[in-house]
Amino acid sequence: MFGWLNHLAARVVEGWLGIPMDTHLGGSIHFFIYDSIKILILLSLMIFGISYLRTFFQPQKTKAMLERIHGPKAHIAASLMGIITPFCSCSSVPIFIGFIEAGIPLGVTFSFLVTSPIVNEAAFAVLWASFGWKVAFAYAGMGVVIGVVSGMIIGRFKPEGHLEEAVFNEEAYDKMRPNMTQNERLAYAREHVADILKRIWLFLLIGIGIGAAIHGWAPEELLSKYAGSDNPLSVIIAVLCGVPLYANAIGTIPIAEALIGKGVGLGTALAFMMAVTALSIPEMVLLRKVMKPRLIAIFVATAATGILVVGWMFNILF
Image 1 (cartoon, rainbow, N blue to C red):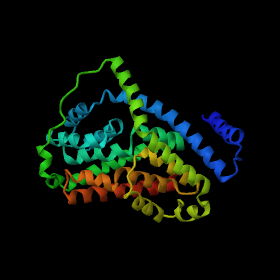
Image 2: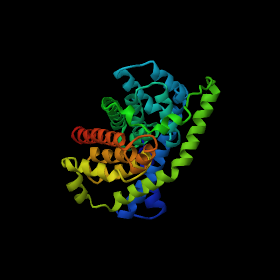
Image 3: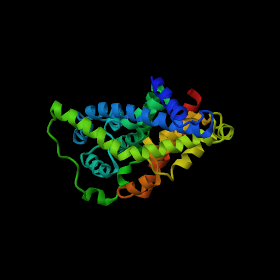
Image 4: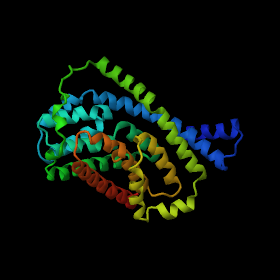
């Protein structure tokens, strides 16, 4: 699909810059040029399509739909909605509050919150660009499974008693917006593409830059030996390394791609990416505003276990 881009990047490196492709520098520059253009193209297309679809699932409507569903189906619905309705951290707290005040079980809300940062349209597009559609769909499916199972397990602990009292003193996010016209939906999709690219382009390029450095200079034999798919401990180490960091999936996927190119197991790299996006310490600080430490500990333990299982499964299946 992107063979033309591979040849173009090679022409830039060898023809315009005069750097041999078989050198560390040449390989790194080629990786950076190829991945930057490829990811931006697919990212723009995917964001536009999902943003258009998202106009039919506004936050308020999401809450209204969850109110009418109960049992395991509610967890599945919440997790699926987390894919097409990813919200930034600044809006997660009022939406979380709105779900609770609407009487939606907290376990169901966790299914939504766990899936949302792990799987979104941007991450899906970059995964497709980097690893192909099979891995992208498998990753999205596993993200939903983690969200559903985590929410159901957390619900067993009766988590409502571990919320901070201040949660119920905030304003709920429950004002319904009127239906959008076709032109408004298309305009929203275009604006959302521009808005997301404006906010993430620097993180994306930094991630690709780090990936390019790993691609060109990281010791392949060492990474393959200690972080290959046949080493079960590598997934645990990847999750532990990802927790202290803070980044979105966009910045971590190019790093994962470069690590995989050096022999790191696919599951190990994806487990690292999931841990960074869903279990980072800064995210726990944000959650501390509305949850007591015990509930945060339950959330981290449950989600981390799911990520470890997914990492091991990917290493076996791929």
